[in-house]
Amino acid sequence: MPHIQAPRDEEALYGLGWVTAEDRLLQVTLSALNFEGRAVEVYGASSVAVDRRKCIFGTRRQAQAATEALDPQSRTLLEADCQGFNDRMASGLQASDVEPEVQDAIAACAASLGLVIDGDEERSSQPSSYGREWPGRRVEKDRLVSAAIGVWR
Figure 1 (spheres, one colour):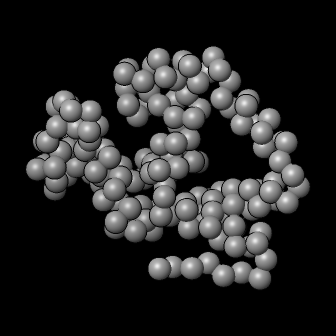
Figure 2 (figure 1 turned 135 degrees about the horizontal axis):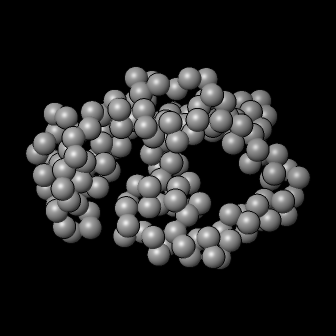
């Protein structure tokens, strides 16, 4: 099991943010889009109502207020984690830098949304996680991973 060791908590959280950009890119991207009321960009028209609620209830404003209310130490740790993530994204993360297992997870998620991943027609032709068939649209795995990276640029 990988470990992050650092002399200070802030440095450890910075390292965590850095590796999160590589190992949890899909999860962070989907969560951010959902949180911001932009899930429709990934899931299509079925998520318009959810996106609308996020905007109406001011999810982003509530999170900003909660962040501002953090005690100084917690805020410093949160900022260190975010800075590590942002620095890794700014360093030129490429699809080839993303671990193969993470690329496969991104491809599996895309397949559940109806995209046909080149070289993986079998998985892509199965019903999605929503229990229905989606029309397939062909995409290369490297392009898909690059698109996930592109959300952060």
